[in-house]
Structure formats: C-alpha cells, structure tokens
Image (cartoon, rainbow, N blue to C red; front, top):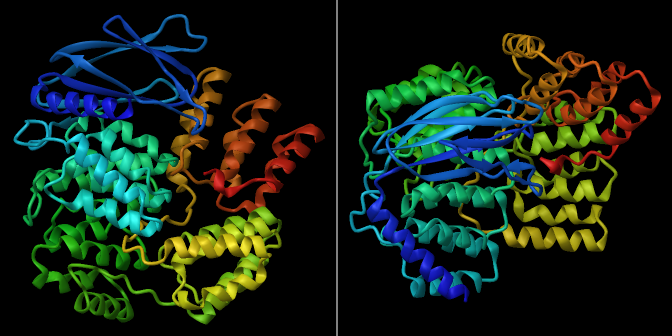
Length: 540
C-alpha cells in the first residue's frame, strides 16, 4: 500500500511540475493568538504541532493572479482584521503573520528549471525504493549522510519533496538534516511543496535559515558573479540583521549557498559588516569558495587589523582544496583557555555553568585539546550534563584520537553511549554550519522593542507580544533588559510565565536572581527558582 501511495504521489508531483499556472501562497502563522485565517471567504484553521510548539504552515495552491482578501481571526477579537494582497503569474507568495497579527509579504520567482517542466522528472518509484533501501541498510550514520549527500549532488537525480524528506530522515543529526535539506533543493521537482521539508527540523532557527536559503536560491547559476541587484538585496538584508550573531549567520548562508558567486569587491562589503576581527577572518575564509576573481583576494587583507589574522588567511588560501575544503582547527591558547575556565568556574549554579559550557562548545572559533575539554566538563557534577557536553564538544576537539581520555569521568553506561556517539560521527565529510555565541540586543534595538511593547494596548496584547519576543531564537537579553520587559505586565502569574520563557534567551544567567524582584509572592519565586535549577538547555 505504501508503494502504491509513493507511486501515485510521485506521478501527481511530476504532472504538477508541467502544469503550474497559478501562484502558491504559503502562510506562516506565529504565536497562539491567531486561531484561523480566511482567504477569499475560505477559512483555514491554524493547527499547532505540540511536539515542536510551532504552527504548521498553510499552503494555498489554487489562487489565480490578482487581488485577494486575507482576514485573521484572533482569540477574543470580535472583528477580524483584514488585508489585501496580490498574486502574480510567475511568482509564489510567502505571508508571515506575527503573533500580534501584523503581516509581512515576500514574493519568490518561480524557478526557471524545475517549475517550467524542462525535462525535470522525479525519480521513478522503483529507482527511489532501491536508492532508499541501499542507504537505509548502511549501518553507520556517517555513511548514510555521505550517500544521501551524493544523491542530492548527482545532477541526474531529481526528487519530489516527499522522497527527499524520506532520505533525509535516514539521518538523525539535526545539523546534518539541515545541511541535507539545503543540498536537496537543487533536485526538487515540486518546490511549491518544499515547506513540508521543515517538518524534519526541530529548531526554528534551522527552519528560518532554510527558508532564507530557499528565498535567495538562484537555479542554474554558474561561476558568474551575481548581479548588482541580487547582491544589493543580500547586502541590505544582512545590514538589517539586529545582532552580530544573526548578521554573521545570514552572511555565512549567503557564502555557503553553492549557487552564489561573488567578486572580491562584493564579498568584502559583506565581510565588512562584521564588527570584530574574529568574525571577519571567519567570513573571509568562508567567502573564498564563491570568489570568481581569486587573483584579487589579497584585497581582503585590508579588512583585518592584525598581521596574525592576515597570515592565517593567506595560509588558508594557499592550502585551499577546491574539492574538499578543510578548515584548520587550532587549540585555544593556554592563557585564553585559563581565562575561559575561570569565568565558567566562578559562575553560580549548575544551570549557569552548563549554559556557559554549551555556548563555548557551540562557538565556531573555539577549539580545544581533549585535556582542556576534560577540565571544562569536570566543572559540572551531573553525569547527564557531562555526557551531553562531551558530545557537544566532539567537533571542537583538535586531537580526536585522544578523545577516549574523557571516558574515565563517566560510568560504564554513559561511557558506552559516548563511544557509540563518537563511532557514529567519525569520518563524516560534511562541514556543519556553526552556532554562534549569544550577544545581548544592542541598547538602541532594545529601546525600540521596549517602546513598541509598552505602547501596545491591552494586557493580553502585551502578553502575546512578549511571549513571541522570548520565543524568538535570535533575540538575546541581559537579565536587566529582560526584567524591564517582564515588568510591562502587572499580573503575577503572567510575570512568572514570562520570566520562565525569558531564561533561555539570557546571556548572563549568573545574574538571573535579579529577576526574582519582579515577583511579590515567595511561592512564585520558589517556582521560578525550581524551574531554573532544572532547566535543560537541550529544550532549544
């Protein structure tokens, strides 16, 4: 029965590729206050996926070109707000409805290859089943990762979104799934259904990055620098990012999009948007893949202040392997390590230490010897936390051959789990995009955000907006900033819930006890303290 279903779906998908004449509208609804939307008198209920606590995207595939009316039904709102949008032939439309009901629109031009039906046909059911089984039967995760990556890179292979999803779900690592989801897009025959791919990703950050990748994807590009208009779009979007982390992440995605190529002059403008030396050096390395005038790449050195950084970049270029780029890992200097160690050691509470260690191991430019990593992990006493930190540290280890030296700080069951984890991750050729350290929102951005919430009318509206803010993965705050936001609502129960939801966005959790001042009852303070002490940083 499953085989028949796959065959029918593949057949329908292939037919749709040749027949698309109407726009597809994808509506992303955020927050819990928006209950339903109505497009041209047809109602679509917003459904929440409780496993991920996000709303499933709504895709409307039968809208002709022209004006359409969108109404948003919100909780406790008698008269639904409405807006008018226009669809155009040759473009799909993405509509994002924020938790407060505000609407953003973004058009995406139909891809010239896959959507016009120029001999692009999804793999037959028989061939796909054979490919799927051959990958599934491979016992190592790294081997499955390689095989799926090779399948998506094979220019003779095309897949429906459902087929690509099944292949990606054979790999368990979320970062690898994200990498594969991007790689698959070239070969998708039904890109209008690609929003279904977001289901394989647990992180909203990964989903947002995948959506950004898709929106800037340029099918069929070659080693020709992008047009001035295309570059200006990327530059302005990068410029608008609120934090250094989000800015670097966006530029990273632009440089790693294998359909993007840049002149040195273009790449320099993007790299220059990073305010610090470390991120400029990092982005300069990442940009090299897509540079079309490499003889001019020495001009990139002007963006680096120190001779050490320039030397490092020159060595990177001189040893660059186009077929298999390797990013050199150098262990942290002893003086820098001692500073980091003391900083984490002096943090109060298990949660604050785990948070700082998680951030250290998630920082792209931080590399450690096994001995250094062992010292850091031993700063926490919980066996489960030590195990998760050891796993998180593996990609940052410069002497992975010595990694078994960590095993003696674990019980036999944890040791076995860690050994299996390492065995499963050895040999993977895929470079995983970095997760950046947390930087609190700049004062100017925070002030604008604070004033927006303060001027929002009604307790329910303020609560909804604050909930949405603390649920945004790219927003980080000091305790002082978060405290000011929480104090914008007066209800004790609401303050307690907001304080809890804010904790995952705090950059200085060692100061979180200051948040208790916003609560009047000891019962609420005790509940918040219990929440912090049992907080798991894997929730995100």
